Image (cartoon, rainbow over the protein chains, first blue to last red):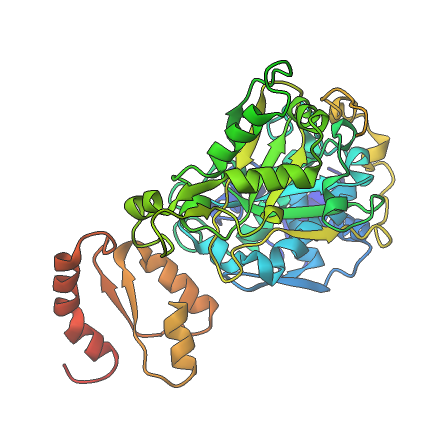
Length: 389
Length: 74
């Protein structure tokens, strides 16, 4: 922190800015005001915020979205405040902006999602050429600690949802317990380790675009499957294990139906399915077909919520195979992951993808992600590289 | 809360029923929606899943409060 920054932080010279005697007091004040996620934040001084706004290439007072349930105006400056507090580099700002725009899409049902008693949190999936440049990790431990871009970009979205959207636990965010992904929930797809086209290409974008996809997701459920090609060349064990998790009668997907879910295949599981001749779309279809329950089972378990009909019918958890988002990430091994979703809200909280606007973005000298050594960049391709096809 | 607010906006007399646990959220939503004084009646928590008899008792005992909140003498 420079001397100039200290002055501004301590005097609060500009209208509308808080003031504190020093950095430590400023962090404590932000905690007291309920502006944090409970962890220490970087103090959003005017200089730091201005630098973040500059990196976006957009005007600070430009309103990009309205975030519910508070219906706060998400200006570029307010988003920049969240990005600074979360510990983002200025280079991360275009991704944070795209993430905020994505959750503000009406199809995402943000207002209802923030207010629900379910534990849902937006999972951010980053695809495209900027992901490795910015150090968004896709390999071993991508959803765990140790990766600055994953930690700070996801956290910036959460702080925007708290401070602009008003999502504070117990008053507006009524999640009964929440889940750890509500601190940050962000990873890149391991495109190099995937046998298939990148996830954003499957969703209609060009491979050269960098895209942020958000989906309201439960905490990840680990799925073990030993893929032995001698006895299970079709990858049925993997598909069955994933489908069992997707269709568990403890999930909203099974009980309410009509929502979406995420399946993150580790590169070994993806390779087994690919070598069995399955495309991504065929994996989605296979999971769609297997993720189903007898109506009688659902009716017995949740009579008020089960959809009516013949008790012997097989009730699919998803309206379409496309509603199962399949991507590849993590290290290679026995475990893949399933994230069920909330499945409620007027649009059943759809996944939303937004292309990152890189034309406007501005590199801040000395603070560029590309100019720094970041272990995430070296270790990003945690899974072994796989041939295409 | 939002249903009550939306009805009131259409000129239909409305009272929002809120259980104790969700009182802070009702205050937040009413303020965020620009109708902080929307009439509401606070019910015990929980209601859902307590059985028809219990729910009927709650409904009967809170009818006067609901009518009063709507501005009608109980």
